[in-house]
Image 1 (tube, rainbow, N blue to C red):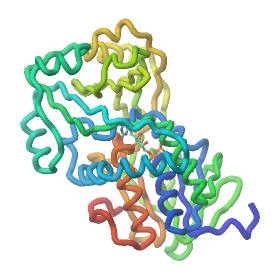
Image 2 (image 1 turned 120 degrees about the vertical axis):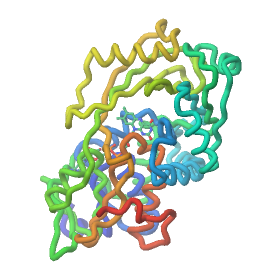
Image 3 (image 1 turned 60 degrees about the vertical axis):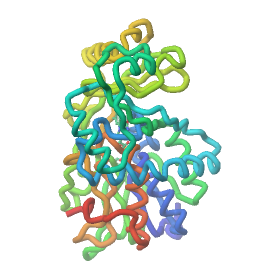
Image 4 (image 1 turned 135 degrees about the vertical axis):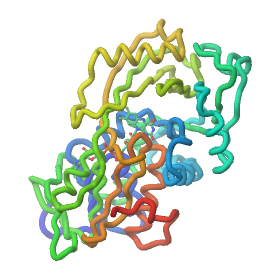
Length: 365
Ligand SMILES: Cc1cc2nc3c(=O)[nH]c(=O)nc-3n(C[C@H](O)[C@H](O)[C@H](O)COP(=O)(O)OP(=O)(O)OC[C@H]3O[C@@H](n4cnc5c(N)ncnc54)[C@H](O)[C@@H]3O)c2cc1C
């Protein structure tokens, strides 16, 4: 790339779901966008995740998270249709619903659902047996959220990658940004070992790595890596139909019979390794939810580093002391469930449009 084509309207640092979707939305507004990814696109947290389109125990989160979930849910089907049409890749988004077998917080859950007008019902033990005969626990009453969907993360990433390219985003893989360029309180670009790119707007969407980059320009971002390990069983299609949550662990049935189960939340820095003790613990928890999974082989075990933030509220917006430098990071356990709204909000801010939600609750301070 020579000096005449290293100038853009906007540079995105990080090619996970959040960086890619931000890039796509901004490019669709007619801006020249470049995205710099340190390794390959979407191979970190966005690849590792389960793709549930709702937080687990969603009533435990601040309203700022629920607002993002709700906006995303309302616009999700349009996005998926658009992605499918433009990319030809099906992210396999399905509305499998989520069952919650824990009994302790049912009153809080019901209040929360009423307050936000979210579909949440209770089902008795008999109905539960009819819905999902292969479940182990049989609580007197379970919670059922029929509108919770799921998506296959790698397919979603591939699809967004494709449409971002088609929208004209310049994508540079293997370009680790090591420095944000600032001149007189204004961002002017970003550099990697290979080259410098210039733009009056730079967005840090580097997931768990965002804080390290911002530290170098004197900004403390409260985002830290939180490791999550997951396993995958191979079962027969239809063995379980619904996402099921119990005692902090869950199983996610895919259409083709894969059943994902997770996940841990470990504060171990940037260590993405997996270990056999955790695998055993995850198998035990999955068998508690669906005992007949004991007959199925565990075919995969992996880990990803979530961008953990206080109470799971992402930081979205422009720094007050460095003009043009934006953040879209800290989506913690819910980047897929809230990513659509967070990237639209970021795009609104960057392009000076009216915002979809009140940006104040996510603004970097
Ligand atoms: C086990 C597990 C289960 C999960 N399950 C769910 C779920 O069911 N539902 C849900 O909504 N969410 C889930 N999540 C969370 C979700 O995956 C994340 O919130 C989301 O992927 C964050 O996206 P991101 O783009 O911010 O981060 P990432 O996907 O980590 O992307 C950040 C990117 O930035 C790049 N980068 C970093 N530093 C630099 C640099 N200096 N220069 C250039 N590039 C850089 C990285 O290489 C990476 O590709 C789960 C996460 C895990 C780990």
